[in-house]
Amino acid sequence: MAKTLDELVRTSELPVFVDFWAAWCGPCKTVAPSVKQLAHEFDGRLKVVKVNVDQQPEAAARYQVHGIPALMLFVGGELKWRTAGAISYQQMRQEVLKVIG
Image: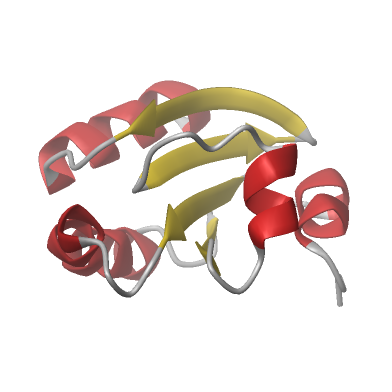
């Protein structure tokens, strides 16, 4: 099992969807149910990870997170999509499908 986000993104056989968030962030709370739904719908096709930027500021810095929620999708270690701010479940799902089919 991967010990760090970098290792997970680099070695996962599945695409990795990352939600950078914080407990005090209102928009993060807004997208949380959508992220959970995405994990459920794409179970077995997508690995969904939540990264608390207050607990892991080095990861947020390394991935150049300037606003949260920041959502990113990696395939084979390569960043394929990213956005910052709250988006709807349908938008999130559409972007994932564009990348992983």
